[in-house]
Image (cartoon, rainbow, N blue to C red; front, side, top):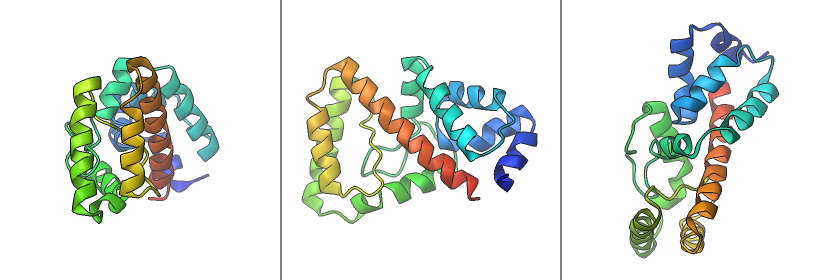
Length: 170
């Protein structure tokens, strides 16, 4: 069994919650995950994460979105700790080196997105250039509210999976 997972399985619920929160900023997700312990292996952790995530209310999804900085920025509305901030920085590293024009268009798109949907644009940015992210943002601005919330939730699910894998490597 993975050492990090074995140690986490043994923590008191409040400590376990603090440790896993940077993987997904939803307190309801954290509660769901800590209540399912112990996990036998990485696969069961990842499967459970998806099950818990998909069964949350949309308000819980929105709570998780607040733990991410806007694309192109470094601070989230709600901090879930240094680990989460570092992961966000790594995930958005290609945006940080983008041309100023693309950064400006991303900032404008972020504002338009928040005005339309009421929450930040969230995308699993790993391996995507700033131009690719901008194209995704522009496409998603055409979504209806319900379709966009589902797409954003799927992006958050992907981010959570990646972060859980990083967390297990610690």
